[in-house]
Length: 246
View 1 (cartoon, rainbow, N blue to C red):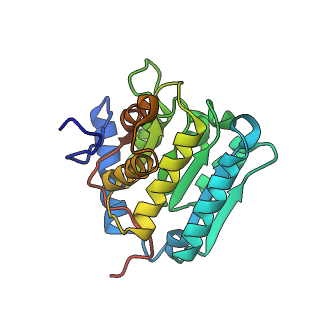
View 2: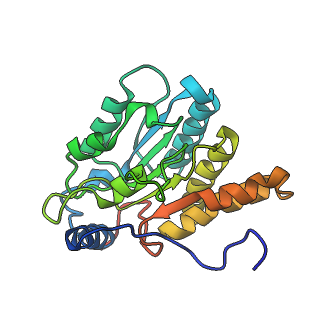
View 3: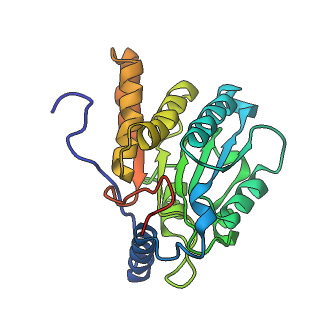
């Protein structure tokens, strides 16, 4: 239609080889089936929140604190958070290696020094997160270089998985803190409070939060952010929010 409300749940599977196809299929299937549940029981209660206020302001840190409280209110026992200090990339890599169900970043262009090599150097095995990394450029899949969401989705191999099962990021370098924060919080409200079940529905929850906050679409910013925020992964992937029951 002609409004900002989506009729379908979209995800992009950006792959360049048969080996990458095999990798993401294995990652998604093993994640959804909770194949290694007995080995990684604590993983389903863990999350990592990074909110760097140094460039975009304290609201990035406050957004992480809000999402941390939301996760804890819904049963997460181990939510690590970083909202100040240095060595951001090392902290985030270590969190990935530790294995978290959700990996969430808010900050600014360049992800506080976190790069593709940090994804490659993390060793989490099958403890793959749903990554939500909303800041400038993380979802710019149309550029020549690999976007960070693409890196999370493609990373690893069939025998040595890395990165995440899916990733939400923001395209272009023109994004703004207040809109990114609302989408970020809306994603987790959707998954935890509204009980949406898929990666695609989580993204739409973030967009709904933006629309409900600014229904008048001031200066067409809501229209822009509805397009810029995108999912790298299968929109139908079931996202775990607690320990699976088998």
